[in-house]
Amino acid sequence: MSYDKFTDTIRQNHEQAIEEVTRGRQFDAWIKGSSRTSIRGERFETKDPATEKTITTVPRCQEEDVDKAVEAAKKAFNQTWGSLPVDERSEALLDWVETLRANSEELALLESLDTGKPLADAEYEVSEAINYIEYYAQIARGEQGDQLPIGDDTHAFTKHEPYGVAGLIVPWNYPLLLASWKLGPALSAGNTVVLKPAEDSPLSVTRIAQLSEDVLPPGTLNIVHGFGDEAGAPLTRHEDISKLSFTGEGQTGETIMKAAAEQITPVTLELGGKSPFIVFPDADLENAAEIAAEGIFYNTGQSCDAFSRTLVHEDIHAEFLELFRAEAEERIVGDPLAKETTTGPLASKQQFEKVREYIEIGKKEGAALVHGGESISITDSDDGWFVEPTIFDGVENDMRIAQEEIFGPVASVIQFADYNEAVSIANDIDFGLAAGVATTDLSIAHRASDDIQAGTVWVNQYADLVPGTPFGGFKRSGIGRECAKDTLREYQQTKTVNISLGQMD
Image (cartoon, rainbow, N blue to C red; front, top):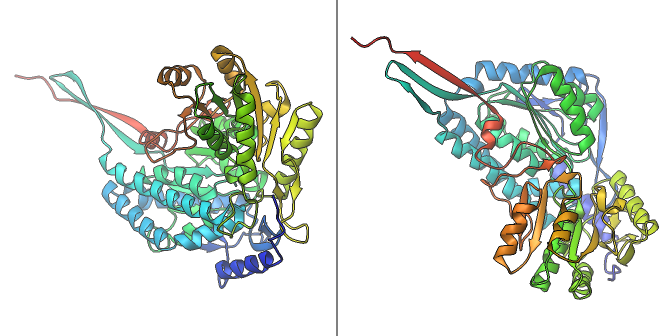
């Protein structure tokens, strides 16, 4: 692949885009319905992964800022949002959805600049994020308890009530989309929220909070920026946080569970993955190769459900590998703002260095590098955190590149001899978030879906997620489910009411 068509105009384009989305606007914390700087006045930069230039700065919040945000959320819960009838909450959220849709182009540009994802992908993800908020605003109206048949002299029923203040922590790879997975059910259920976006990509979430002004009651939605030990930790251990939801890597998830245990705070955790994609010998190989490429190279591999292990039957291995490599060659690595780009940079320098390290680990472990593996520049300088789509063949499932979450565009191809070996390899991992199966045999599809230990199994597709389909993990991939109707229950407590009707004469 040639990159010589890309020039220094990329930097000019990005400078212009940054000026457009930041002109006259400061990205501060959002507390009690207005922008706030941190109490200490400290700020930190968020950078454009394609050019390594600073986009803007955000407050470096500390425990005292978290306290202010939680205080505002608690007051809003007790005085306004928590006591609003569900139809009024729904109307307010739908008004917010309308405002977000009117500003979706701006949100997508912010998301692209802040994460490095291609603008077309950012546009799609912003649209989906808004759809999730709308979905929860609508289904909340239909929520109802159950009447319990106990006896003629007793009327018993259940009702569902919000917890109070929900603390939400979202990652850097899909900042707005994953925030919507939590904001939609949390707010629709009647909770107020304090949300901490990732320090590497805080801008789109901050902007949707600003767009809630005069739509949501002050204090309903609060945003605090900062680093995990300075802002995240105080949020997870706060005595006035009644519900926690976190998406991110496993070690942080463990830390959050321990903090939650001290307060007996219920948690939802969506953690890591090392998803297998099993290509059976009867599969449509061209289609399977397309799915495998989309599954590992979309969002530059920075997806918790990425198909990072491609399991291929030995009889079709050679043919499939050529098709897979051809798909990788067709990926256009380039300027995220360019229409033709399908693969952007990694989201941060830290992630860039991590991916490069794992590529070297794969080589040392004896895997065969059949495509990519190089860091590249798309200009005449070394700007940007770009890595080629990479495929390793000859991978054994006990290699580090097969067992550890790389979170980059690095595929490990593993051969299997029969069905039982395929399922055994697929399940021989600490994670269980998602998996994929390529087959034209419905019996194999159903059987594999039953046997694979994962919260989601996609057959002949990748990441077909829509509002209403539960998403979450088995094993070390997490606790709870997002994206579905039942997710409202993650943000509600069930109360049983039992009323004696007295003796009948």
